[in-house]
View 1 (tube, rainbow, N blue to C red):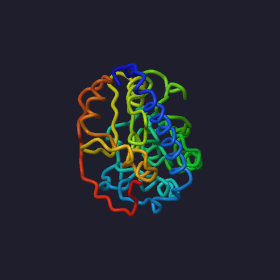
View 2 (cartoon, rainbow, N blue to C red):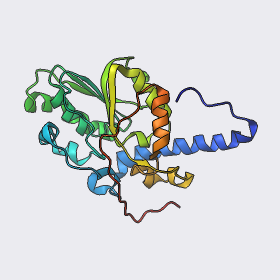
View 3 (cartoon, rainbow, N blue to C red):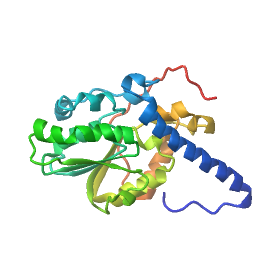
View 4 (tube, rainbow, N blue to C red):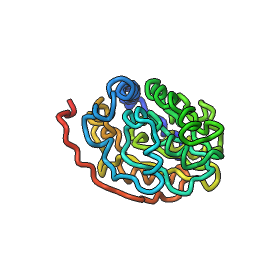
Length: 262
């Protein structure tokens, strides 16, 4: 994401058109998959979106407070909220039903702020439904310190996320779903205040995936089709301006499912 792609010659114009159509189909497919196809975590067809160790400490305690509906409709592969976030401004990319936002709201305290961004109406409806009562009745806050915004993580400026207004960006198995990861990194880098961090859980692969996998509706929805090759991710992060990423934990994902690209 160090700049725009090089100009295309005439021979590649047809391929580019096809790719754009594929990208549009992927975006629409993801919205449908998370908004309509999946009803709860029991609807998942692979283990990829639930493949992670159990949390500990304050995150584990905060999880116990999250409303059941929020938990049941959340799909992720980790727990990207670090300790020591009291008072911070946190942005959650692709927040879904809001589980990590609810946890973060408890950990940042009433003085902190949490904003969740998602493109799926159905998921946002769940996230918003419990926010006020959770903050007031469960956390005992005088104000609701989290809000949920409809929009795309590739265009944070378009939904009012200002430059250098966020201390910590988190994301849970969502960057892989984007068809323009360069833009995602550029936008979150713009939004982060000096000294800010991006901490996220996601699915990676050790090779470039073929087109039929990257556009397969179920594999993309299950966070497999859009998995980024590790070296490509490292290059993209440093080209954007981030310091070299640090891997906190890593574990293989063993996937078994009846679906295959076709």
